Image (tube, rainbow, N blue to C red):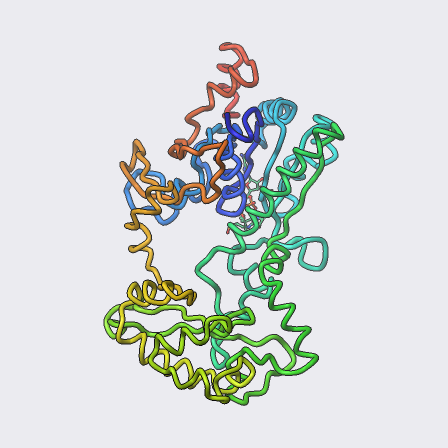
Length: 415
Ligand code: CAO
């Protein structure tokens, strides 16, 4: 038994944002039917190809546990099949460019008329407003949602992040909306329409930066390096380098081997509650009684010098030694782990967060499994479907077409 067992999802998504949402729902047990253009499929199948003739990792890693149905939704027979799918499914998810679904003839009003219980989720770049008709990709939304303006160093340009907060982040938000709507439908009997604009979802993830925007009206942001450096803050939340976003000052510091290893660094947090332990660990016990260092307020103007001193210590240890020594005395630190290290981490394999999957075209590959661990709804990660792999079984077993009707649908070029 899986949490979403029995829920049928018409997955009209492509690229990353929508597919991350439906992949999560598939992991939670929903039957996800991915609708793809005949002969073409999701564009990512053939993007960043690393194994000739095989679906790319870009596609396979975003489309596990789904079934693939090819369908031309602009062909008259294809539209008739789509109508039946809409009547049959509980949830429909799409992330086409604004207006594309309407151009196919499937407005929300029409979908609702076909199936009043339908829950319809859409990802768009922007919500209603001046940019509502724009096509949007990950980095566009990171920039428009406030992430880029607040990421990077104060004296450098805005930066985008490695974490796909706009695509995968929006997919996550939408998944929550869909599951909540399924719960509401239990009581109301009605479906509803859910919009997850990428700009809004990025902004939600950047809410501490809007917090800082308002704090700026009451004085400088004392935990930012700019404060210790005596720099002007300007009128908008500045980029803060690797400064901690919370009230506990932190920085990324070099560890043993940094000269040759790009990831020999650790994040070091000088949490006030364990400041005395920090002083002992780094060999500065005298700071515990020194009024210039003893309180968080006194330390604020000396943070750069303090972190330089801590770095003198971290540079004598590997990032893993720093982790062991500091955690033993409750000092929070974070080794900078590379993708290579994460891929090889046994604990992540044990919990199913890093999973090896077998694929008929490409052989074995690694993927990220479901990060949500539910005691009563375990997740097995199945390979992504080949293009149209399940067309026949969906037409017959789910939509109830006879063999003759399936032959006629194929004849029309709809699948
Ligand atoms: N049968 C027939 N036609 C189909 C089809 C099918 N099964 N599936 C898609 N199409 C058609 C669409 O109807 C559309 O046709 P029209 O332009 O004639 O209406 C066409 O394919 C292209 O769809 P699109 O405009 O969504 O795709 P694109 O590659 O031009 O743009 C993207 C991609 C992502 C920029 C755009 O879809 C978008 O802005 N989506 C919303 C925001 C989003 O999710 N962005 C994140 C993407 S991940 O980085």
